[in-house]
Image 1 (tube, rainbow, N blue to C red):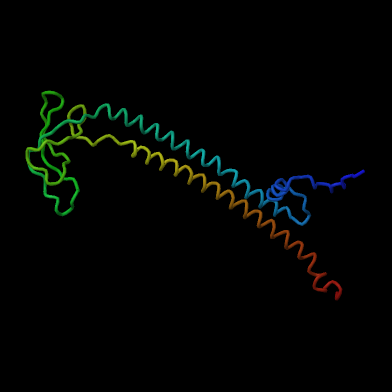
Image 2: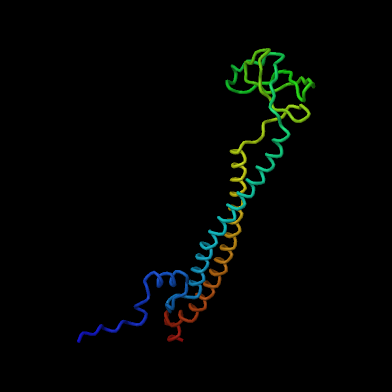
Length: 207
């Protein structure tokens, strides 16, 4: 009758679990010093904090985007696009093609109220041309409301700032932990060397 050979103790443990315990400093290897295990835990701690940091940056970006879009919606409710008529020609744009210019124009807003002032128009716009301008409820010229792309860029900047802050804080904590671990390791090494050096060099026998 065939019998399987007995397996050594611990041989049934999956290899990945053994590697994980070794990487996290939880193995029972007598050759690994406490400071080695502390360094492994610090490295894994920094890795595990990456997920929450990314999640926090994403949440901050989404919150910033929602807040920006609400503000844009409220602002856009008081902005109006009207047609204005230029009262003078805009400067030529030969010196910088595509760069907008300023020209005096006239428009009506609200109904029955005439406004005259300088507005942004394409270079080389002639006198008497019809141009689209944004104005407020009172008819004062204003810039166009921010686009979705502008809001997304601002939200991305906010998320990146949060991620950078988390990285700096985490890096500082990790650096302090490594510095303390290295100091403890150096102190332990000096104590061991003081104990072993006389035996290794033969000074204890000569004395």
